[in-house]
Length: 406
Ligand code: ATP
Image (cartoon, rainbow, N blue to C red; front, side, top):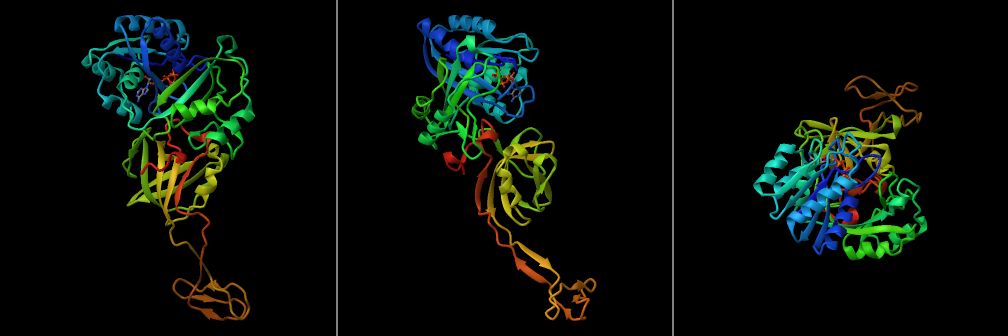
């Protein structure tokens, strides 16, 4: 059977993955077998999410009625019902629902009624609490197919420590990254000297290590020194797979969906208040703004080097009319040159225009020139892929260290 759960946490605490890890242990205690624990991230632009729009699914063997009972009791015991925005959903099904529902939930938006239709079609047991919105994520989790998958080990805190400052040895995190990158990623951000894998929210997670396989995340995890941990769970995930991306075309993008969009840069990138960088690119007649926000740190230095005529592929979510860049491919550099009035060969002063199509004239000696000074700009930027740093990476974004997705 597949057991899906979502929407059990609040900004004040809890985490659906923790609830799933506790449930797995309770099922095992009842002599059920848990064959896989799965963590899926869904459309990152869903505004009613608490944090990273995660949902979980357990693949288990045993009595489905009993599993449903235990799962209901676990949700009722652990979900943060006090929060107005917490609307848990639970699904237990012997038959996997159509994976098309998962693909829509990760790339687009779904309604609760759509989830209920899919669940009824596959004869699932299900229960929604409060407005039942969690049924969307719970259904997507059990419907998920992961052609590309990664691992994450989540180490949880002992309940008596929840809400207190976390104690994880920083140096051991940097050492683990050095020893296991690129097979693990986003434990720390080396360039910005920031720890990424330890949350700051009051939830039960102590730290999480992401990587390409259970063996690699476990290898890194064993290097980390911390406060005495509680339970630990290795999850199979769609994190770092770009599962949220749709092929897109400028002029045909929908708000709050995420795309890969080709285009030609048509404006010199500008830096705005707050350090956000933007430029316009066009595909045919359709312009679209691309944004590299301040938290993307050094990625903005790359974006600032773009010039009109550069051919790019922009990757990110389309929000308020802009693509919020997660990464960018510089396909080719345009011919960049500066055109200025020529220097007078006699006075060495810059000439002034003598009117449109009339050439240039030296104000001092009256000498004339027909052609402007054209200089090729030498470019430091090289064609290739560039990405935001680990501190700014979205859960679903595929890091370049995993190889190129084309
Ligand atoms: P949690 O740890 O509780 O899962 P979270 O940050 O993952 O926290 P949720 O609290 O689960 O966010 O809130 C997300 C809500 O949005 C859930 O009710 C989920 O069912 C719903 N949801 C997820 N994806 C979609 C989608 N594509 N369309 C509509 N609703 C969605």
